[in-house]
Amino acid sequence: MTQPVLSGLEDLPKGTLIQMPQNKARLLAERILKSASPAKTLFDHFTALDFRFFLERVRVFTYLGEDGNKLVPSVIGILPSFVPSTAADAKHEALSISFHISGSAVAVSVNVSHKPFGVTQFSLYEVHGGKVVSSSLPLATVNKEPTKQLASRLHAPVVSKRPKDFPAMTVGDQGLLVSSVVRQLLQENFSKQFFPPEYATAITAQTPSFQKFGLAINERFRGTVLGITASTSSSTTSNICTSTSTSTIEI
Image 1 (cartoon, helix red, strand yellow):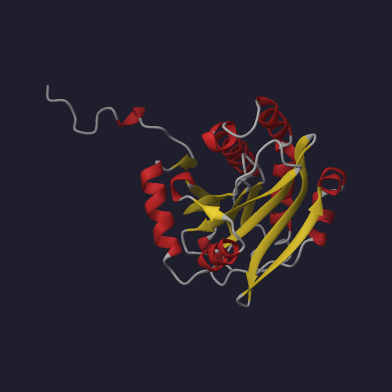
Image 2 (image 1 turned 90 degrees about the vertical axis):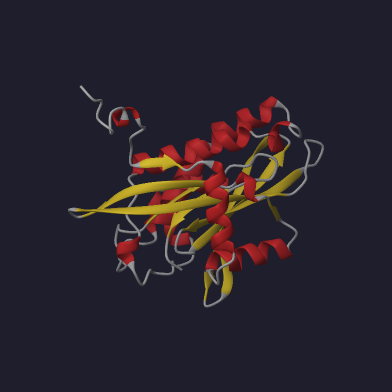
C-alpha cells in the first residue's frame, strides 16, 4: 500500500506557544523595524541613548489564543539590547523591545547590581502620542505588593483600536515564555564571556519577580475596552545587558 503523503506529521511539535527559528525571527524583526511603528520609535529612541541591538539575538514566538469560542493567532518578538559591561562595574542597565507583528511595542529595562548580582529596579516604556513615556518600580515593591496595586503604580496603557488582534495569553503560557527567554539569554556568549556563573544563578532566581512585573503590566488593562483580551508578559532578565519584555498590546 502506498504511504499517505501526510504520514509522520503527527511527530511535529504541538502547542499554543512555539518559538520561531532564528533566521525567520530576524527577517520578521527587520520588517517591523523598517515600518513606521511604535516598535521603530522605541528602537530609534534607545539607539540614540547608546543602546545597541543585534538582530541575530531576537526571539520570536507564535501564540494561539482564545477569544470566546474563536482561536486567534498572534506573533510576538523580543529584541534585547547590548551595552558592554563586566563584573568589575558596579551595575548596568539592561533593556529590550518587545513587539507584536502589527508593529506595536513596549520596552522594559532593569537596573542590575553587580555587588551582589541581581536586578534592583524595573522600568516600563511605551509610546503615547508619539512620545516615549515610562514608569519605574523598585524590586522590593514588585516583590511585596499585590499585582493589582503594582499596576496602579504604572502609567495607563494605550488601548488597542483592534482588540481582537491581540489574544489573551494564559498565565501558564506567559510564565513559560518568560522563563524560557530568561534561560536562553543567560546561556548566550554575550553573558557568559563577561560574567561568572553566579551571575546567571542570581538572575535565574529572580524569574518569579520578572513574571510578576509582567502580570502587573497586563493588569492595567482590566476595566478597559480590552478587558482581559490584551495580554502582556514581561520578563526582565539581563545577561550582559539584556532585559526582555513580551507584549501583545496595540499602541
